[in-house]
Image (cartoon, rainbow, N blue to C red; front, side, top):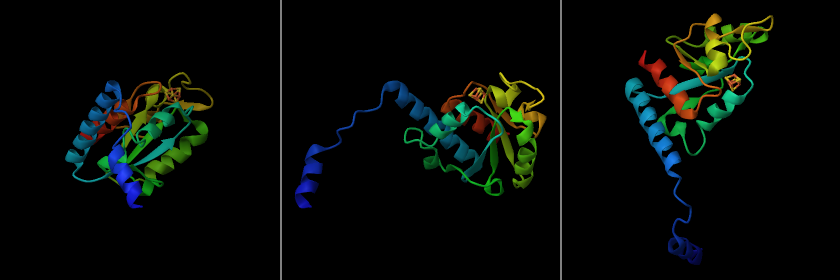
Amino acid sequence: MIPMLKRILRTGIVSEPPPEALAAEQREVARLGGEILRILGRALTIRQVDAGSCNGCELEIHALNNPYTNLEGYGIKFVASPRHADMLLVTGPVTKNMEHALKVAWDCTPDPKLVVAVGDCGCCGGVFGESYASCGAVEKVIPVDARVPGCPPTPVALLQGILAAVRR
Ligand code: SF4
């Protein structure tokens, strides 16, 4: 054990620093996360609702919790139930099959609640638009406080949208 500790101390940190573009993104995430916490003065809990997306937006939402962006480090975390959430982060378009479920999730979220529509599909229906199977934008089904356009939006854009909703 002692030799191993000595070896760890001798070796030091061998991983490379992140590329500058990534470091700049980390600084922006830290700034946005800090500002959200400063406005709220407490943690923010988010329930993500996939109302019919292609899952491209979900991949970027997952990235919010990876070791680079480390959203939970700023007190912003995803929860499993809308009953425990301050905010719904909704990807769309809202399919007819998910219309009722989205309304139920919105009803179950305690007031005061915030809704962020994510991606071009969530903002305006995107490439899917409105049809016999799709209601289109999230705002066609529930009230929306902020929109994050993009196909899909980046983690930084998602945080900017969350901040815009919190500022309201
Ligand atoms: S905005 Fe783009 S990535 Fe997001 S659900 Fe629509 S098609 Fe998929």
